[in-house]
Image (cartoon, rainbow, N blue to C red; front, side, top):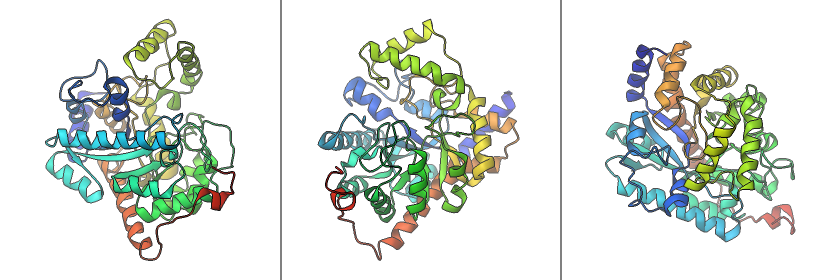
Length: 400
């Protein structure tokens, strides 16, 4: 990568900054300091403990961030709901704490206003339908609190939807799962299909009346991991209008990293840690394993390979970026933290991507997909009332 390409990338990002589909800073703050913004000053350099701080977001050319209000899927029922509320509360507190840097965004107009002001639009996405505990009223409450996408599952199946990384149980979406999609359409909440099984993806695309989102998933045609999007699903995005946002997680983008990650996860469990734990002690354990067992290293070029493939299959209007910072222990070289996006843009410039196409990748596609979901919701609300269906009514008395 030449300095000329890097400078061109910086200039492009000043005009059309990155909309990143997924950042797990809220969960990292929960685990490390119990959400205490006095304990970690996000206006200072936090690279020793986090992938994210406000100066590095600016250096990376980030103009809008979907903050993940994720909770682990071993939290269930009311515990999952209350933990999600705590995550939402943190994001709102974060935006209030730094109003000169961040602006809470509830729609596409808010995103554009934040860009005009030079602030980072802060949106929220719930990662995993366990956050609503099989309750459509809870789904509506999350929307009222500002959540603008929900990932239908996380790593484990739900009673109404199969996950990509669990054994198939219901074959995609159940009738109640389809009702969740319809209610999300009515609200204007994006249906996020990262983490779900390929059959769940296909069912959701069949049911939805609004564009879908993949907030942090790459191409299965490049790296055959179940977390990635198969080509037949990518090929449906032009008709649907949706956007697939490529992730940076090495085990999802680099085939050689898959086997290594299985061993790293087993090592974490053997030492009493959840594989996704981000506490300092857990990260020390991860680093010790890496020192003894050097990992295959992905780079910005690895991510670019996925984006090249996704553009070829889905088209330039249907791709974006979802790094998954602070939600993974390992990252590609050159994409080590949120300041790294210019390296990826420079790599794509070097491959001949036009500035107009890169502007779609970074900003315009994500803003469009939210705006179109809002338009669908306005139409649906004229004829469709809030659903009060229960999973027991739709899937049978043993479903929940």
